[in-house]
Image (cartoon, rainbow, N blue to C red; front, side, top):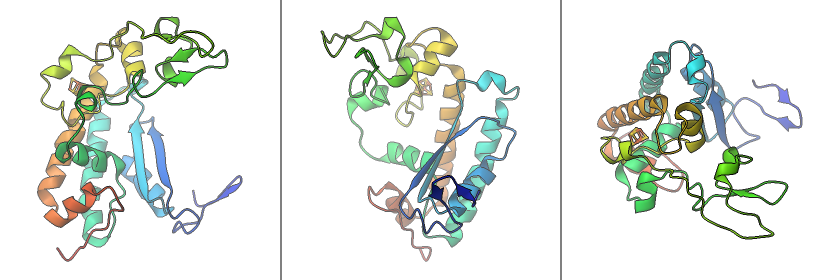
Length: 229
Ligand code: SF4
């Protein structure tokens, strides 16, 4: 990192990318999640969102390592906010916002909008509820040159209705659920364990941040934290 990556020149300090957000996928849970955040933040990304590779969670012999790495990251976040004026920790930002800010009813059981506000169209013009489900015949929702129709898939789960974490959870990825459980209406346990851990850690973080810091994290506009409070 910090080298010239093809056409995009990135230098430490991030002068080349002042308003860019980084989105990374975390595949090997034995690697330090905190170091990944440190590296990406040092490049100057304004927000960093590292999402675990839930689909291949089985490939990680020790899924608990993800939960431990998330705890270590929370410790780093607490250290970071003591001496910085920003909060570039995307998963915690979005979880804290979900915990405190009003959400639309549809958003509560149905995080990503697949098949409702999000669609994918493949090269034949076939319509699917999202790009990951494309080419899967039972997910097809018509064709742009023909009819559009609702498919008969259920993307919500009964399990979520009684889950303590339902108001802060994004409900993960329906494609992952389908691949790991065989159904789009069954939530995979890997996601649930990770999501609940993220909620726990976010609540713990909230208890240790000042009111002003929390208000800044929840603002739609840039997150600037006054460390004097
Ligand atoms: S943690 Fe699992 S069961 Fe709970 S709301 Fe999220 S997806 Fe649903």
